[in-house]
Image (tube, rainbow over all chains, first blue to last red; front, side, top):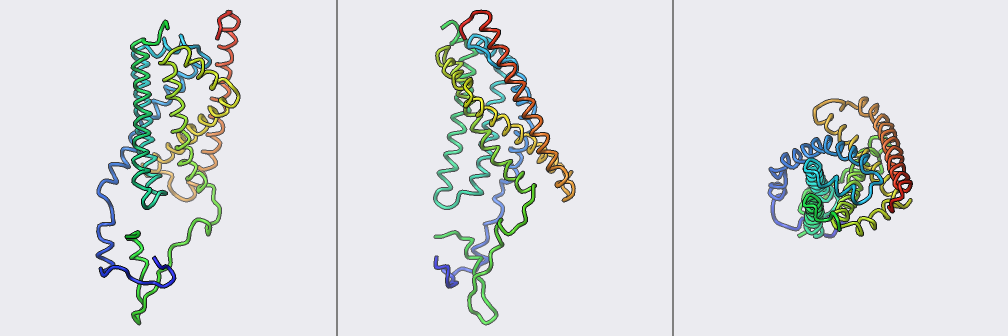
Length: 137
Length: 157
């Protein structure tokens, strides 16, 4: 666009062009998802920090034994899922705010894909620990 | 087509000639306030916390994979550079948690007046520094003690 001389490019009224650019009708759901996951993460991450005190400097056998307990595995999976869900929702807002034009959609998809894959990796690691697949090897 | 919002930046004078409307001034015109640093820090620490969580998942994956992979992971978490990264992660998570709690309080409709926000900012910084330092030192002590105990017991780490 030629920015030096102001001009109108499309023969549509300015109101007509602006219409439909307002709220996308789904903003509150996103906002709530961010808050609900944030509030859930308060007790979950507190649990995780406490567990890190139990595991600081632990060797593989100790970690494997810890991760194989059903209660620990449940909490661990909950921490992982909630963390990456919250990260996904939060990073999307950052991308929406700072990435414009053609790069916006690919960046947004990349955020979704990467956070989902990381969450899945964590969950499958937990499943493997519960199944005891790593003990004794 | 370009950004459609640009259409709204073109207006017309009373004589009919077109004029580019002024845009609102950007960040650099504002006087420095602590609250604006804390605000952007919440986002930055959120991104760092995500990176740390990714490392955490790799650590867990190594534990699931077996003793050999876990030994490699411990080489990373055990060396000074790795511990510096872990401390950065810890500090980021603590600040993001403190900032998140402030956001939840604001969302509930409290502590949102200018005086209250300006009063709470330094408190948030102090709480973050205190909690991070205590947790960091305590975790280092616990890890160090367990490692020494294992060496004493004659087990290879």
